[in-house]
Image (cartoon, rainbow, N blue to C red; front, side):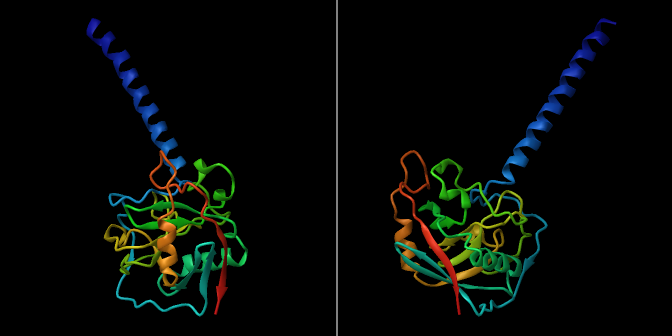
Length: 222
């Protein structure tokens, strides 16, 4: 009896601990759905389909990102990532990106990232956690390489969580290959992106610009 009476409380404690840990995990997972994932080569995308052997065909319109550092012109690949290209063009036509910022500059990875509507406000701590009111998009991975000038869709931990944020790689980044949707490429103004990447970083952070790098507007041009 003594042994049995000791086991029951122990089992209850273990069960309660398991329930608590499960709830914590679910809360963390739910929180990550709205925050853009830090780029991580270990991020799991098992099971995601990869489009292979398809030559990118540029859309008839290009996207022109206007900044105080000069313009960056991007050709878009609807035959590679039709949903992301459609979303990008829709948000551009609505003026969604105007006044947002390149809120993340990562010299280590050689990227600049923007497209978060929360970057318009005066609280830099929420930058990277925002998105449009449109639903998240499924992964559109391909075998296009993340070389200098590639334009990718930022996402959360889940593969199917791209929305509005995007990034430009300024150097070869093989860890991103087949892990983030490539939907375009810089064809003009890559040097302007280089200049943006050298902006001073806010002390105490690894990638937040000390001063806002504003995207004045993005337009579509034939």
